[in-house]
Image (cartoon, rainbow, N blue to C red; front, top):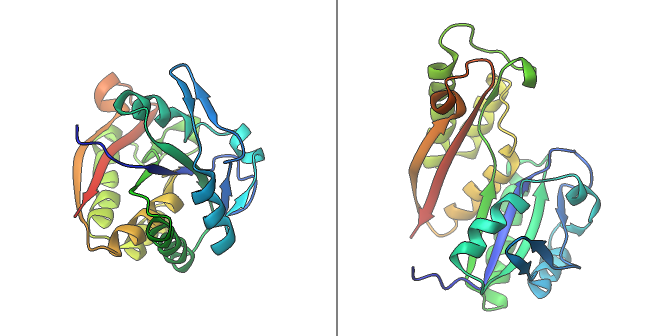
Length: 219
């Protein structure tokens, strides 16, 4: 309802570690079972010209974090263009610089832009090589993720990354998340947690737990 965005910039986790810190793939349009999603080539080229982003299809061949969002977006609207970017290994300063270029591009190209971050939260269990909690892991994963979420809601990239470091955290999209934080700080957006749950709460499995959250910003 009232969906009128021209361009959707999706910043996804780079699980493979391949490519540059900002790897984009706009040369071709994207295809899902719901049809073709056209890329915003002009917007993407602006980012390439004015930031560290590069056109590199290789990491996208081994990545799912962006494509899993597309069917949901296509359900809402078929009238948008996509700028898909995988993000890894950046500082807060680099996140801030890139966020500024996204905002600059939206103004220069007269686009109404929706920035979407694709990330899970904590991955806990032997399968992930991460066992922080021996007792009551489902509840404790929630508590840990709520610390991360509190930092996001406070728009505090430093606290967020410090928590990741202190807990050796397994939030796969931590770098896209700090770009999001720096982006929303530019227009003094409000931030709200819509929903959190982890897979243990849903499935009852304590051995493999992954956290999920829906967070939205608005002015």
